Length: 349
Image (cartoon, rainbow, N blue to C red):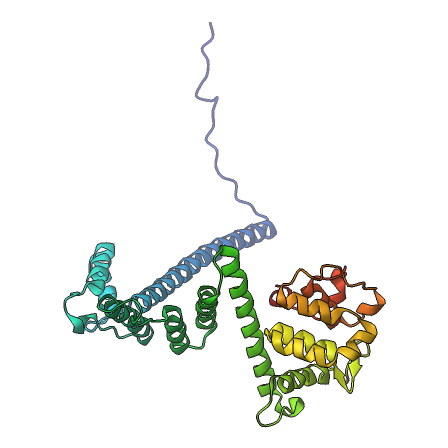
């Protein structure tokens, strides 16, 4: 049989160089663009890593600072500097050791117990006064034992610590709890409801005082104003922004009587409100007969008058009147009737 000629079956191939200059330049351009995109991607990732590391370090330092501010720094080495130094030498273990040494102090040493943060020191003073009152109470009879208002002390300490929003909100919480504890009554509802109402009323009185102080010329309350003059001054500011008393309010002798009565009720001045309503009873009776009697029964919590006051949509054009009707709980009052008065959650409550 004939032998296969394998030597000539395969030939060595030589690369054929492209003689097309335009195609070569296009290929080089595409490769340069791809290389530039890859380099920019790597640079972007490196920048992101550096930025993230710097941000995490900043957050960590801020967390350290806030932690020591909350716990109170004792006299001695600066905790943050010590923590950073130990962390640099020993990593996480060194940082943990530095944190433990920064927070450790001898309870038997009064000098070491003294903290350098004024805010923490104020709270510590409140606790000391409470403990002193407890010790004094244990050595005396119950009748003559001194009493210490813990919540009032915490409220003062918070108010003296700063004027930022967080401190103000915490101070309001102490004040609200104080109203709860001072409220009379035995049951849970009897404790919470009067205390919450007293707190909301006190906050609205403070709001009125701030408005009068901010616009003294528009309020025009005089030197030593009564509660009625202050309320009238507050309403002067409110209506002055509109340029006039709204036409839908019921006015007598240039005084919006229902707005005045509602504001008295909102401030918690129930006796002054009842006295004012009795003085204006002839005027009120013309449009709302029986309202004063229902108001008196509402404040006295008397079941003698249980019938609803007949109201119509036309008689509730004054939103302050509608709000008072809703508060007294007499008559069917549409929810939208008092929309011009109830602006906040506190007003609704």
